[in-house]
Image (cartoon, rainbow, N blue to C red; front, side, top):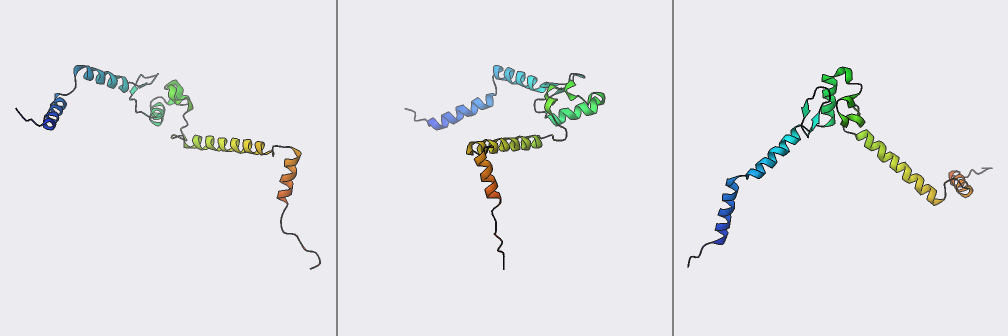
Length: 140
């Protein structure tokens, strides 16, 4: 008899569910996650906590500012600083060096596969291609 609008009813139901908020289980889970994230990094010396989004430069800054006598070995405060380079905080130099190393290894592998790795024919080919150029004409 009643010709209700199903779409309107579904939208109203969804709106009421959103305004109800989180359930108790969802609130407990969110609180536990926030507590875990807030103490992700703990300084071993002074027990100061850092949140999960703290980056290595920030941790290194803590070591140099709060523990200057320990700044020669930042691993004494945070294990994450084992491979940290303060002169290259974003790791760009390390990435570039790694890429260059891979490039050289690939070139050496390619050269070895082509037969230019040190056999006599490869050496002769290298010598022949290197010396080509314009010929000098004598007598003119």
